[in-house]
Image (cartoon, rainbow, N blue to C red):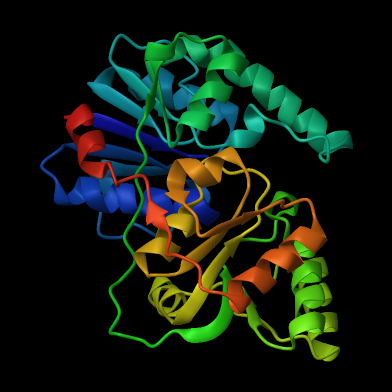
Length: 334
């Protein structure tokens, strides 16, 4: 039986990937047991109780689980960055997708920075308890190799992502710019919004569409102030994936100003819905796709200029450079 340990996953992109992984495993013939974060209670109701357990996400609870249950399994996939807290005599894989553990920006300071430093030390200490790390891109692999002093063959690049629901043919709404993301600071919404404001002041056309949830009060206030000033910004908030597919389908451009990504799922989803990608001139963009245009994500003026180029001339379509390797992952676990 395979253990899928996901007790540190409960929100955002990690939860989307976890839901897709669980659904794919349940459709396969693999025998799995799931360790879930207690905050996900109410989800995964179709999985029998005998095949799952919800616990509070703490070091002690996780350690106690492995001490009491670890010998029952033939393989382990830790889907939450951190290997098991004890060494098991079975193959162990750890899916790593938290870039902040190995590439901590200077903008994170004080207590928050100390917390990440402790997590990094924790990861370094327990790296010996996994046979392989799985990552979503070569750039993450390079950072992980350097941060943990690992040999190259212990880190495997294996991206996977859930396909969005199919949509009927929808006409693109001209000069629309979509950014699908939470509003964490590194997602760079403020510079994007200010860049769009400067672009709109010059060109008097276009619309920016974002997905900023209620938990990001400061960013929602900034958006509201721009809207009150007549800047055409539409905030959809958190929306179901069916609605998300529609938004990709109707948008002419996908803009992606994030300062750091382990993958950049929005880039893939945008291309699969025929959006032209305006991407940050950073390595993660080029690993996922060949964008239509790139810009300096640190520069408001360059963002504004790139938006102007997009609406003022004919630019080519973007090309996807990665594929969904969920089947490869399932074979590895078999």
